[in-house]
Image 1 (cartoon, rainbow, N blue to C red):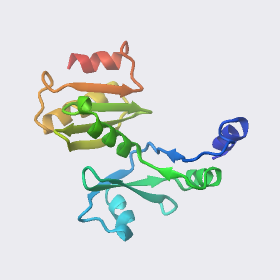
Image 2 (cartoon, one colour; image 1 turned 90 degrees about the vertical axis):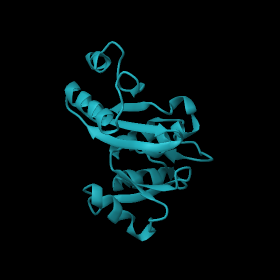
Image 3 (cartoon, rainbow, N blue to C red; image 1 turned 135 degrees about the vertical axis):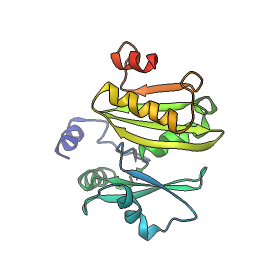
Length: 185
């Protein structure tokens, strides 16, 4: 929050008024519940079933109407307070919601394994024929961890690594050892 406050005070742009403000939290603390089973009052319990959440964290819910599911995710309490002070009418959309909606709208990204890399974490999203087949987040330490998770997803879903296309985005360089390792397998 202190770093964000400094950025705001030094920024001419952030001190202007905005018609609409959307913040996209990018963390691995999310889960999906079908609309037919979702009960708003139980949102925290749904997330706590799959993640350890402290009592100070704020739970938020995105609707992915195209799939008839809710994406329940965590917002750090201090970040929410800072953003609400800066932008009172702020909206949140979790990274996974944004990427899934993007893939659903862009047929060129469907029927592929889409991997997004950021800060020792990768998110894998697979949309097949307009339906969400897989979405999960994996923390990693080494390039071999990444390869293990990727190959395991391919194996569990019955994909052939020689046939099912792979799209890499985010913090990965084409000339890196990681890219070469993935390309090899």
